[in-house]
Length: 65
Image (cartoon, rainbow, N blue to C red; front, side, top):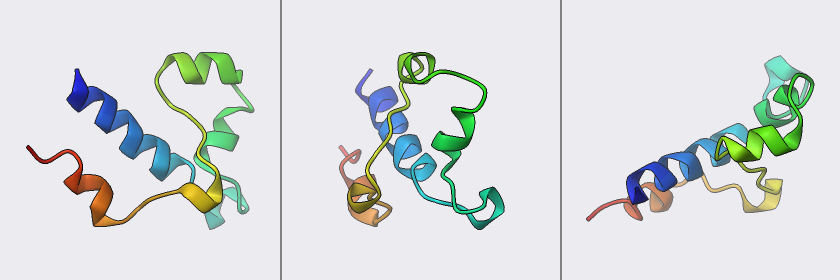
């Protein structure tokens, strides 16, 4: 179960990073155009503040056993 939680943490960090192709929006914000935040959060995806997004290898190392 911890592996799944880590996977969703990785995905949340990736999806909270803005993209040029989305006109500077994040994939998280783009999906809000279709689904409400409650549904997205129930799927395990959370919004991470831009200053707190972690795309460094340190995040991956937290999953090492």
